[in-house]
Image 1 (cartoon, rainbow over the protein chains, first blue to last red):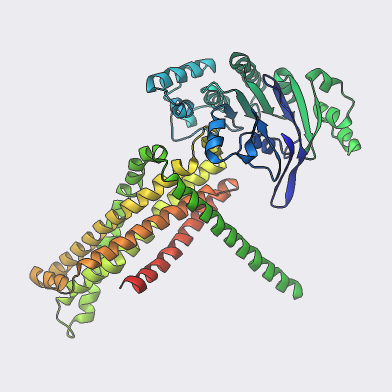
Image 2 (spheres, one colour):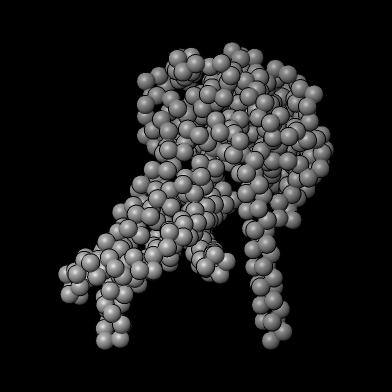
Length: 245
Length: 260
């Protein structure tokens, strides 16, 4: 992502956001609520187009692709939404199988088998015929994860995957994310302000502040940084952040 | 005093801007929907269920309204004509009014509440809960998947519902004439046939198709562009009914001026 600028209703959210994510790595983007983390993530999958700047994936500029090419690109991307965004009129199995129905050559038997496999991976086997409204928040997030990995994407994007979950369920989701990354060899981008989660799952952590990336480093580097903004954020010390502004 | 004037002008200006933006968005959506028509593999499988929801499930309310309208038309015609015109004109008035005006318009207005508001609430909820974004990330064209089958279903099913409403309205008027107005069946039929033109039915169907497209397209547009959680969904639903009603009545006058 190169020099992304994006504003809504006159308010500038991203002001020159630049971040490179190497293949196979999991990068967490941290930052305060409303700092534009989710906005940055939506640019990667083409849900938002930048006012200025470019998003490059596999040599293609996402922000300039036509609709058909974006559909092609999205077949390689799995997206886990903050509140799962499950289709509430469908069963869990239909939700997980949605992306598979867009894969050329997939028979209904093959789709059903892959759906079962994905539900097994997220420890929800036997839940296929239930509706999303019958599941807890953590289970819904796991279904969202199953739906995202069903097509075995090269890239996995997670929007606040552990927000609103209890610590135990968060740890389960984190373990699943690491497992999915390992099994699929996928490149991951995680938007979160859950620092425990970020340290557990990330190869690198990038902090977004004032519309730009303020700091990028490994979890160890983040822990050791003396940047008062980053330190203040990870330690939950507003006084430290205030002094750096 | 100046502040009040300035604020009023600002309010009118921002309202006008919102209206222009809304029209622009709807225009883009209409173009996208027209392009998405060729993606029949997206919307084709959803057409029948939508036809059932838009059409079949609307039949009871449409027939309820039409039957009472037919009864009232017959009684009011009798009240107006008695002593001035032959009573068989009751059949003429019931038939003409149902087919040319009240069948399509009352059905359209009722369905703008039932169908349009339902579509706006459904798509609006999908928008604010990111289900439409989820469709996009799964490589589905949300316009082809959500908008096109609803609008096509409206275009197909509104004429069917209006046709049934016209028929039931006339039958109700007929039954009222027999039961309460001391008219014979032959008299009512004579009145019904005397000024009947097949074009009247075509006119009714043309109106019904445009009303069907209007109600479903307005619902889709407000729902698809909904923002702001539950409050936004509520606003989208209300706006759908208001705007669809206004367009429907304007279209009604337009077709009367152009085609009659």
